[in-house]
Image 1: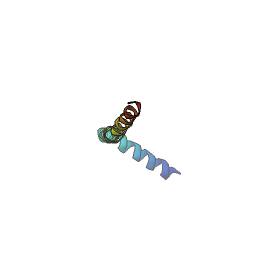
Image 2: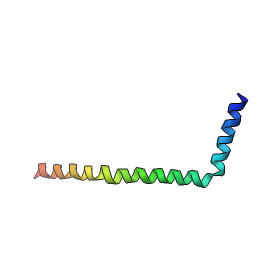
Image 3: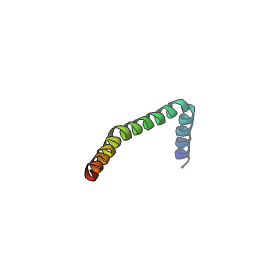
Image 4: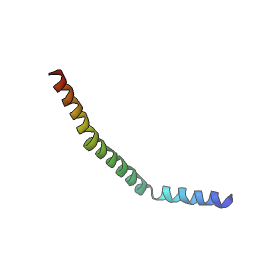
Length: 57
């Protein structure tokens, strides 16, 4: 039990000491998420809107 607590403390201290690295990784994850949204979901919505306009006209 004491070993587990020490291990968790070690993990937390390394995370907080390398704070800039963790924020950089989080920003990278957000970048990939927005890349996925804009390049895969936005063209699909444009296609759906185009089909809707074709159906209306």
